[in-house]
Image 1 (tube, rainbow, N blue to C red):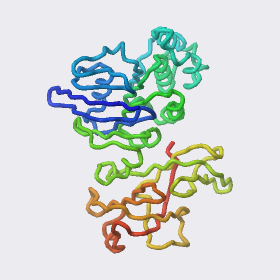
Image 2 (cartoon, rainbow, N blue to C red):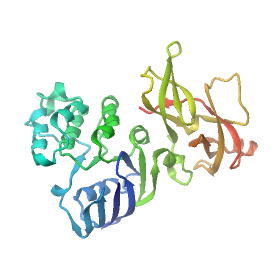
Image 3 (cartoon, rainbow, N blue to C red):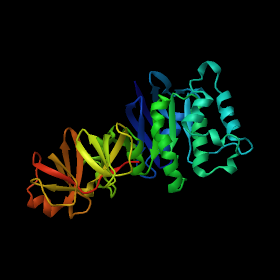
Image 4 (cartoon, helix red, strand yellow):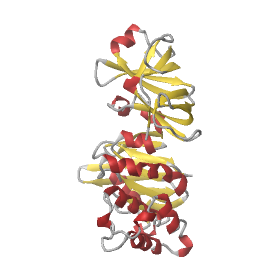
Length: 355
């Protein structure tokens, strides 16, 4: 099933024109610069903005041409940057209000499930002014879930939080897709957030789609600006294998081989994401010994591209079907005579868990 979105909206000096088919499950990140149309897209999907076109959510048409369902007839959950809870109601009453607005026959998520998923049991008797920013946002997400949405829209829900609050709420967001069983569109301007949460990515620029696809494919595509960003990185799915307590190193296994990652212990078999920054990937024409880097993977060059900084070259590689991205000096690329098909060792200076 898919989210089929064909929309045209013109407003003042901005226009949105999209023709995209997005996955009907998991988390799709909507990413782009400020003013690229991220929030406008979510508002169109919610029915807050009147656009022309078609919106079809897993087979159900919400809009065809100018004929559109009003917002209250669209099964959406919407999480804003600010929690906007009812100040005169306790957490329990805020959740109960959202739950009662859904007809009994349409309820797919119970209050007890939302409370458990967002870890709210100890907060139910508190009022919003007695909560931290992260706690308020967890309540706002639970309230959105109690609308039993077919589509959850999240508009930079962590933007107003400090780093500690973001770290507190992130594990709840990471578990949410498997619990909700409905597609999530997640607007963010932070690649680190996207790396921790997204399965799929839609890149916007000036109201147009520059590209979309699985997260790691998009992060490592040389024809997109993401590869030239200071935080450019590949993100690999992995499972925990073992832990070296003496050196505090977690061994994880990916489709691109095993890696040792500095990290606290995690249960064997747990699914994790490993982030390898482009600036932390070294290239060698033969295996090296006597170096500090712990991880070395055989790889093949797929393509090269000029970086926005003329001193550097971007190299897209592949190992075991997984794309990787390296940012090396242009001089090194020329001295090594790199070209598509070159066989190399990709030496990972530092790998980290994404979240």
